[in-house]
Length: 48
Image (cartoon, rainbow, N blue to C red; front, side, top):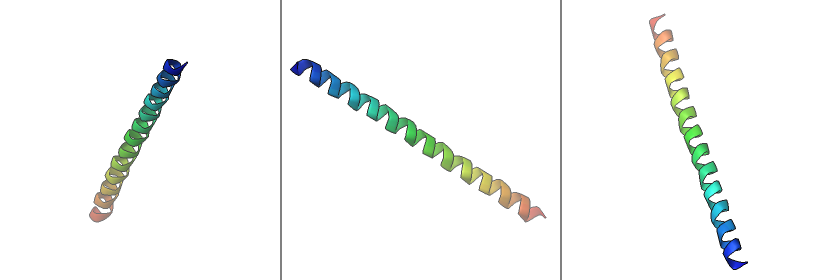
């Protein structure tokens, strides 16, 4: 029983770390996307 609980805790911690990692990657991607859109818009409005 103790071994099962430890393994379950480990797997839940691993899944939590995976979810947090994907969230972090998503936010970094979103940040890069917004910065690039901002630079494109600045370049477009600077020309006109």
